Image 1 (cartoon, rainbow, N blue to C red):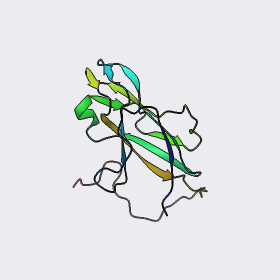
Image 2 (cartoon, rainbow, N blue to C red):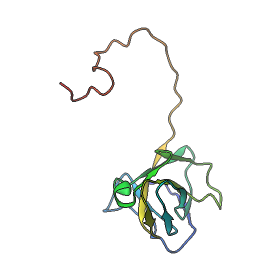
Image 3 (tube, helix red, strand yellow):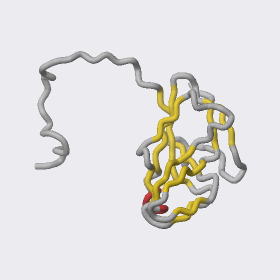
Length: 145
């Protein structure tokens, strides 16, 4: 079943959302304004959209794999989570960027991506003294001999 998501665009200067290369799990988001950043500066980069997500869903927003290489910025919150209550007429999405070098991000540049996920199910935790599985070798041990 295809979920329908209502979207509001704040500008006609960015391309409309679509799957890149057919179907993908992630959809690219674009800068809605030209942003000039000096090394060490922080800026919320407007993405030019607001959405009405279905009840029980949230959007996960992360940088594209090329964002740091192309623009020298990192996302300050590592991953943004936008829940279905952030859906008002002025609830524009933003990319919180911190510049590690001087850079210019142009209108319509693809700087981040998102996917829609169901909320985590309700969980209960049961305390135990043993997990009864083989140890993997500790943190950071995968692939080490």
